[in-house]
Image (cartoon, rainbow, N blue to C red):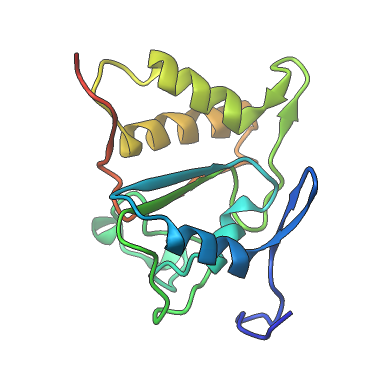
Length: 168
């Protein structure tokens, strides 16, 4: 709506009671005053919601990034202008890539991403400490297997080693 996107089109989160533009979402995140913020977004095309958050990401496709240069998170399939930077300590864990549908499963009675995210937080990741990176790796693997490689969650980290659940 305001021409700030590479493709000329803003993305929106469709909420229960209205719509939230990616730019407005980004402004909300920038106003949060704390050391770390993690958002979990379980919607179709949710990886695209990060466009309003303004991450600094590589522009190469995964197939163009040499294996030794990948950090497990950097080989993403979309472009974001490099002048745009997320707030310090912000991470977004999205259910799917910008061009993917997020799957619901009637047997699970919820979204595939949310199901495996919750299982990971309940201990399926393994012994604490549970970091954002370990939760991502578990959720990614399980969601991909459950959807036959049709839904690939993505993590856009500033702090992928953030401890979500410390050791006792």
